[in-house]
Length: 336
Image 1 (cartoon, rainbow, N blue to C red):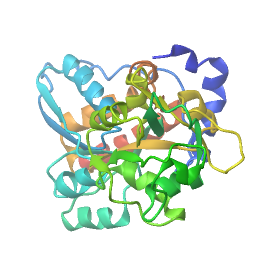
Image 2: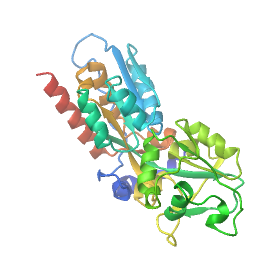
Image 3: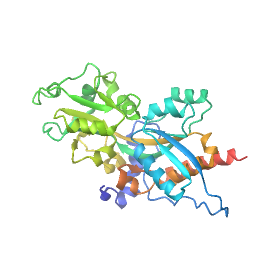
Image 4: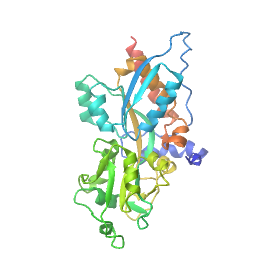
């Protein structure tokens, strides 16, 4: 990963503008540096080793962060098993978290009111915690030499029902060849965010595309199709930039185009920047392994390796502190 994306000025100022560039409700800025180490289990003077299981489901975008957090946490707590499964944001809420079968759900968009209601029916109380930022990326085949920037309007034409069918429909000088579309499944938070933010201006998101919860499948499809196009979280592009090309994006036709990057997501210049979340349940946080894993996750959400090794914008110290205060309040209340 490129480590020059976060110089001193970026850490101190530009990350604070990140959330104002997204259409998601939370407006707290992203940034900061490596948080404090996970709490030392031996500080209490007790010799008991933490043990148990933690189950994490949800967003394929958030998955790389949760998976790495789980690996690092288990290295320090070998008697705890943390299972992380990529199900899509909505798939995780619907099929696992709200029924009470998982402790934490990762999400690349905020939980929906209908999902909150479903959780409530099962006496599951989701707790929203913003843990990173992303530059949603629209990618094409490396042999695509005609398109380097698309506007929100053009993206809506490509991805909406009844919209453009060929590249030439967007520009008569482009190939008169049909789009080969690859994208996330309807259970994905990335699908929801892109539909609401970009596609909805032209109508519903079209259904005649290759849909999958496996972002690797999207990368492979684009790589093998000269006329392919698809979208996913920035991390997957960063890991595969030798196989596919990222398009520059502009929200308004005629305005400056911006390529996806962590810097552009952080300073608010990239139009498809968005925050990422985890949702532990209050009920699961009453179990010590879950509470300690979430504490570890939040304390390390500001770490440089989230940018350097995974490809997302780390959380800010301020956001991490807010999340930790929320966690401590829930844990304290459950102990009385």
